[in-house]
Image 1 (tube, rainbow, N blue to C red):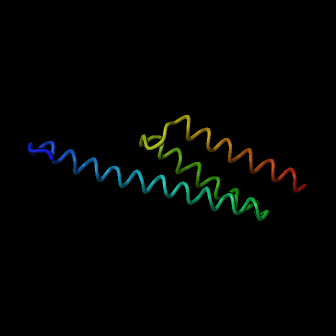
Image 2: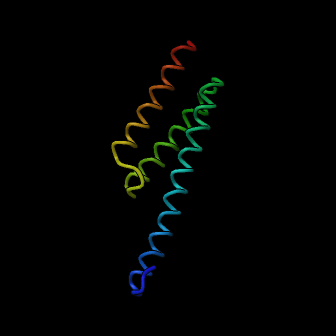
Length: 91
């Protein structure tokens, strides 16, 4: 355990930020699960709305360094590709 006051504060700050980051990642995963469900059911309008939300959340997480910028872009790209493939299959 830290003995110096500033070190104790850093531990508290890191613990808070860790919780916030976990919360953000969990929220993104939840939206992705909802997106997958909507795509599987063929509810493409809902899936498009969820994709917009996911894109916004991932970009926000990337600017906050919760996930890397490239990882966020890759996830959005793959989700968009999955949605477009399902829409084309349905036609």
